[in-house]
Length: 340
Image (cartoon, rainbow, N blue to C red):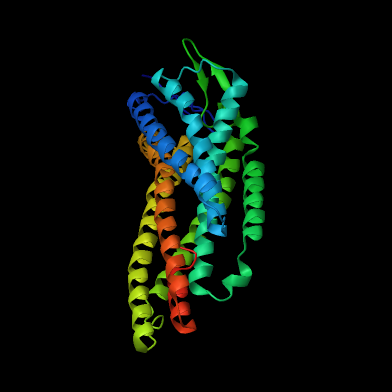
């Protein structure tokens, strides 16, 4: 099948050349992968929302962030049926252009919303582990709500231009709903996309890496839970177990972040940049970009699992906290388990 850049046409102010390559694989890969993400993600996120809304009596800051993250994932998942139909029908968009704009807007708004809320959760855990005493004053449910509102405002503001750039175009036998924008607006879109990638992905990714690096160093310190006596030994044993669980959880979160979001943004940046170079590079980057898109979608299936892992830790921590008899053993347990 003959295709141009931006799935159909490669056109820029500096060069105008016609690239032909076959990417029919995406008409199988994307519908199948999106369908799996839709089914699994909808079930997991619906369960997480049910637990948060109906089973959680007291909403802590971590609960608020996880609720907003789950909402991002759920809204993102609701865009997938339309994209499944679109790609299964080989790039034939049967709906209106305003609806194309809405789907693309929700797709990317909730993608970056998930990234920012993961960053908020990472910062929250970092403060709780590295500054357990100060976190009692820094962290509150009210501040978590304000931060969540700020995140939604930032996401909506940064993704509003998508409503302008998203376009449809009638071809010979199909109607295209551009994943990026129409060819004549692509130069402007490239600038916009680069800025958004830096602000909404690169910076949060650096924050997450730094936070988890400092958290791992703190968790590996032998100081917490080293008090003497029976209570101190019990606190030390609990601390060691919490260290192991926390380090494993950090590894899982970092692996998810790097596998779901990093490949997607790298291949997408190459795909956009190679439009100005050659058809061979464009074809290779296009294949890589299409292959990594399901990984970014799979993040919405992993987030609820992390919530349930964190929920178990919180409940066990509350039990341990209520059974503590000395302030030393209590602080030893809190410095490793609070806010996880």
